[in-house]
Image (cartoon, rainbow, N blue to C red; front, side, top):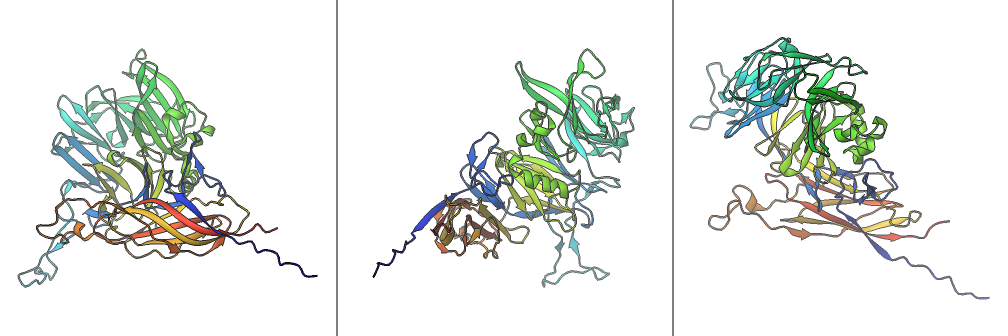
Length: 554
């Protein structure tokens, strides 16, 4: 008996959109979770990989490049500290190595300049060496023994000063013009003072490798220091690491406190005005916050302090309310908890540094670099709390000066970040892989067909697209360098037609590409390479994928 053949069930193409991961890099979620949630329960679009993109409120933008700004010494010593002096129009930027302090406010050349003669021949001296104009700025202070400087700006009736200590050398004072070792600090051994901060018009200091703090009279940058022992306060021992002023919002308004942090993760909070007067000075409490990752591993967020610790980037306001075991979900770094913990395990205990770039709404966290380590920092949007890693910068220390970001490296370079379209002549790649999605049918095998990335940019961009499957990220080689609008490059404008400083309007570009692969959970990787003179002006809006879903196999 003849029977009709069973009807073949035809599959149809389906479309999935991956909106821009405004929730940033997510490294704390179950791999099978297509979305990500903040501690408050709100859902965000996140990315499994988000290298060299900065998440904004509306999308993600490709980061700018970096350019060498100055060079300290012969490059054999790391840049250890960057700090600024700002008093009206008198603005200075300083950098240090372990042997010298440099004024790098104005640098004539970023690299040594070889002198040439009228016939374009390199000039040589009597010894046959090339005649050069050195790029290294002159030393403002030399013959130093240490470079980990702690610096604060402090105003008295005598002027506005920088007071600097490093736990090794005689403390320094900058009066706006010159550096000096006076006025001296007496009472304490000044060379052992390693950290300085201001509270209620008074300078406080940490004595290196002890649980002792010192303080000066009000409105003084020198004179007789008074000891403030804290050995009986910190029950877990260790040593004082740093201190700061801190404002807590109470019912009566902001209440200023003086806080002392130990190497063992304890913080002592004091209120009052005069540590020598028990009637006006009292201990509020001692709390655990996790071990700080260095004396510069914190930022100010309004009146609050956020400290980079071994359990996360923790606000002090949360540490005084919760047990240390419950602090991790309240950390600002909670979305990247796994990556943060890996960085803690792989890096030195101290030497981390945090910096805020207000106009860019950017928070940057750097950590020590060992030989062979990937050059990487963590970056967060200060308004949304979304994270991303920047690679290729090699940051040792940082300072925002004149609304420009400068950082020092292990080989003596001072580099400006977020300028140009290359990393000091090297290309870099921005990679985005949205969180994997089972596309509403986790047991169904999906086959990728076409994909596109929707970009907002002044000119078409060569973006590489690839299908990623089953929570395994396997990226192909990055595409060639993106194109740059010729009118935005020096020498590319037309006289009488181009307008200096004019911006080029952004246009939305998208181009479907064939992608291959099959899996149960899918994502689409976007890779863009930059290596040009102009900074990339690229914003990723969304990524789309068409796919074919097969039947569930039983």
